[in-house]
Length: 206
Image 1 (cartoon, helix red, strand yellow):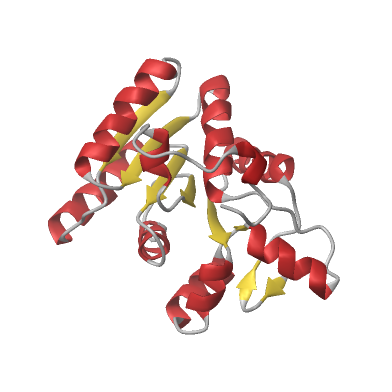
Image 2: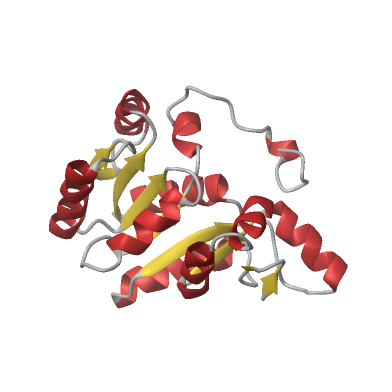
């Protein structure tokens, strides 16, 4: 369904994970975008972003979209959230042997993130990582890495719309099988910033 100009899939966390797992099992590629109040504001001013969201295989709602869906009488739209989906996918990746690639944030943040993942999740296959400050040369390096490595999961933490622009560009060549834009999540997973407490998630309080 479309809410305030942004798409939302009617599914919950289990449905999102099942969809991604099915894509990986079947050899299909999946671009997962997160839709929220900020995206609804951006798509009214950015036709390119609206087109990218329209073509994405999965649209993950955050709280503002759930709130709006309820007032519009639209059922089946549940709060999932980018950071919570990333957390769940890391668990699934470690359990199922999916490889992951981290792209985004400052160099010291992504380096700390990789170190922490390897310490806390030794079974997780970290296929590669790169910071998110890309000039033309670095962009081509990352695209080349993704085409060569072809990780199962690509997490892109650049903020919107830059992360959506990059994922769309990366989809023009063979590469990552599933991509998810996760905003500022790397700082949280690296242990450098605190996430909202569990009781606040999904209630519009983050």
